[in-house]
Length: 106
Image (cartoon, rainbow, N blue to C red; front, side, top):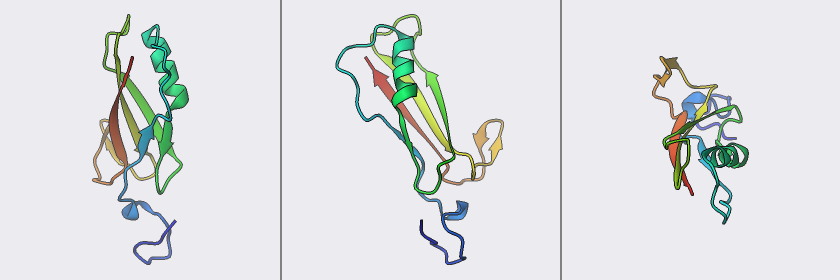
């Protein structure tokens, strides 16, 4: 880590200017048979990253009809919990502690 503001504390919240991220290292060639198969794959294979924290929260919301899906859409939210301040589930302190991404799995 780096002490960007020279206060002898490395990577504290006010230095965190890069949001956390979620990435998939690969997607299988064979299509998913069910919504649950796609969700399980996502839960087990997402790589969460942040430049300042290892304390990340993952939330996955399905955006497709979960009985069957030709293309399953999921909204993924990654939150750095050590810096976020919440009000009714929304980050309120303006810190770069959260990111959202939509994944489309077939």
